[in-house]
Image 1 (cartoon, rainbow, N blue to C red):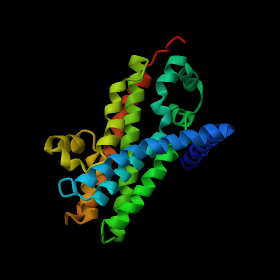
Image 2: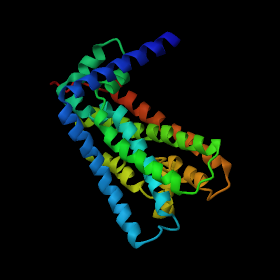
Image 3: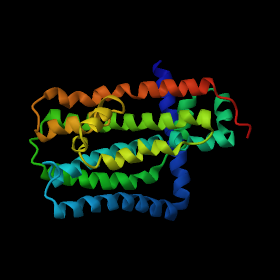
Image 4: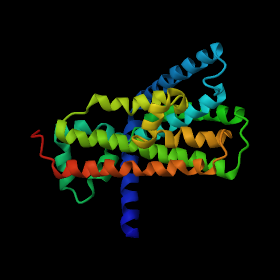
Length: 266
């Protein structure tokens, strides 16, 4: 079992290496695209900045707290998009018939799809997220403890898993539609934009939806309440772990799609 895991990790790193070397063949294009990714997120930041010039808080949440909230959500999304880009662009693999080749190879199809695309240019968004995060943690007056640091790490890891699960759903639906369904952007890009503010500000119905259906709130709102000291419920720090249930049904849907897949005929 250990050897299999090590072998798969090595193979995935080899895939990543191939994608990185490919991107570096066109360095100007890579840096311009990375800068473009940075500027897209920067526009959202400007929207928050100018709003707080007019309003001092959003339902008692301060500017630095909102920046910390948005930076964590943006970092989660960017990491999922960077490493899970193969699922996000899976529709092209279906239309071209490339997935037929994947099924004939001795390695698992999930590993191959993951390794088919590694979007290093998303580091532009990550740089933006890190800058906002650094500002947020230094201006929130948080009494940092080991548990609060652990909470932030759990948010990032588990939040990345939630977004990766959404990309898997997007890919799984392609087995039946042969093309990506744009409505899925509501739950990926839409969540990234909605998550720039604490999810509790949108009302109880949306908070409930993002707690029990697509668990964004478990990796954003509740743990941040503990980090900010707005609640003394220590178990809020571990709520990101509850979000790890979400990728499981996503993988079940993926397996269902693979089982019922018929070649596109390309």
